[in-house]
Structure formats: structure tokens, C-alpha cells
Image (cartoon, helix red, strand yellow):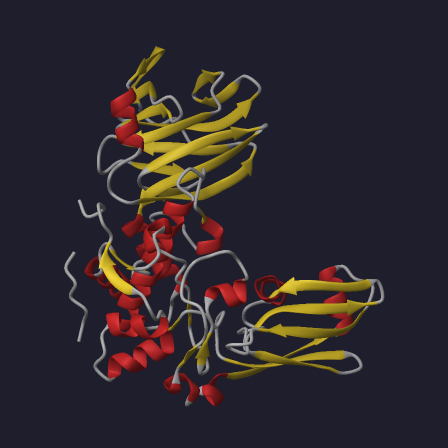
Length: 395
């Protein structure tokens, strides 16, 4: 049963550019172009570069994103290195006194290539000091297709993918609502976003298309339209924690742990053990010596949200995400673990896969096998929420 919820220095490129010596101020049109009605997300795709090649293939316009003024118009495209100095940005032509520009496609087929990677949508170039930072503003639905296809190699059922798409969209819309005035809402590296990478999965595309504009919200919450950070984990091993209890960040969203009998019955099949020498761990964290490691656990789920490293130079605390990044997700596989300290070795014994929060994909697949759809799956893992069409974003 499928959820049918309807709805890259190369040779100079051939180009024709009309440069406006005097800027054309188009306050209304400029605003509308840089702030489209369809939901968009801003992703940091390049940071702290001295120079990089930016190529536009197809017609485009260049705006000042602050003043909504038009700098120039190109018909066939443009390809030059982009750089910045104390006088402003340079991309073939110079932009005196200007340290930010927006490259706006004027044709649906226009693409922008940044250091060999293809992107659709608006590309913002910012000069900060003597370095370049680049942001891609892309349609949320395209963003979801690219990131979910990159993150999930294993096969998931249609209903599990649909639930995942709704959870991911809920988080994306929350980010755009809460950080609306920020330069970007996501770091491409952190979410495996690589523009139009060509990495497609039919199941992901179907799920995103079928759940278009569907999100979860907390009806009683008015801030950020009731949206929240909806996380997910591959296998919760019997109990899924709330995002705020593990990540310890200020966020709305359901509190407390959610039990999963289906995942609990498979707990022994997702057990794992990882051992690390204390001397090696000390080198990783830049300590002279580590005498032991203590876990801080969330009361409702029993999962680990932080650890304390004990050393001769004092104690140091590290959150779960930092610890997993340090050791590697293939070694510290989940937040559901216990620690034993021997004379020279620290042993982690755990269960499950992933952060252990929010939607459990293993359970979602099992629930789908029992005939339950994505909405029922989401109600289980995000109690007190409802699935709705995001208002005012359906055109």
C-alpha cells in the first residue's frame, strides 16, 4: 500500500552580458524574485574560499540581494573565477563596493556550477574578509530528494519513506521559519547536499512527490507555525528518545520517549561493541592521559546524551554527537550504550543504529507490513502532532 497523498578555470564560455553601469532599482520585482512564494531553503555550499570557478549555463540576472537592484543580465551564460578584495567582488566584471550578489536564473533550464557541482535555483555569493562563501537557495522539495537519496542507501518501504519525507520536510520548514533572516539554514556537508548530483532513487522521489507540502505540527503551539525539528533513526532498539533530550538544544517538539515493541523484539540483532585504548582516545581529544569515561543518560529513554572524560588535567564533557563524530558513526553506532572502563581499554556496548531519536525507520517498515500508513507511523513517534498541508505554500 503506497501513500497517495497527491502532489564546475576552463575556457571562457560563450556569453553575452549586458552590464548595467548604473544599477536599475527594481524594489518590487527584485523582492519577488529573491523571495519566491514556493517554499525555499538556503544551503551553504562553499565556505572560506579565496577563489572558485562559478559558471552559469543559460540566461540569468545578477542582483544586489540587499537593495534588490539589478546589476547585469546575461543571455547565454558566464564562466569566470570569483574572488573578493577590499574593493568588492569580482566575477569577470567587477562589482565596486559590493560584497554580495545573487545570481538568479531567468529560465527553468538554467543551472549554476560551483567548482564543478551543478545547482538549480538562486546562488548567493558573499565576500567576507578576503574569502568567498556561497549559498544555494533551492526549492524544498528538490532539497529533500537530493539529501534523502544521499543519506539512505538501504531499501525502505514506501510508507516508511513517506513518513521520512514528511519528517524531513517538517524540519526544513521549521528551519526556514525560525532562521528566516539567516544567510543559510543548512550546511551542505552536514546534510549530504550536493546540488543536482544525479543521485536519484525512485522510492525517494515517489515519497517526496506523494507527500508534497505535508508537514507535522503541534496544534497547540503558535511559534514557528507549530513546526519543530523532527528527527529520525535507523533502528531505535526498542525505545526512541525525543530530540531535545539527546541533542539538548532549545527546540519545540514532543517530549518523552516512545516505546516500540517491534524494535525491542529485534534488539539483540542490532547489538554492537566497540573498544578503544585509553591512550588512543587521549590523542584524539588532545589530552595527556584519560583515566575513564562516564555516561550521562536521559531518564525517559536511557540513551546517552553526553559523556565525561576523566583525565589528570581535569574533567571534560562531550555531547553524544561530538563523541560519535570523533570516534566514527560506524564504531559508535547509536546513543543506546553502556561504558566499561578497564585498565587500558574503554568498551562501548550498545544497541541500535543512529541517534536513537524521533522516527524509527525499522519500526516504520514493520508497521507498514501490518498495513499501517505513514500518518499512523508518525502519530506513534510524534504523539500530539497532526499531519497537515503547509498553509500558504501550496502554489
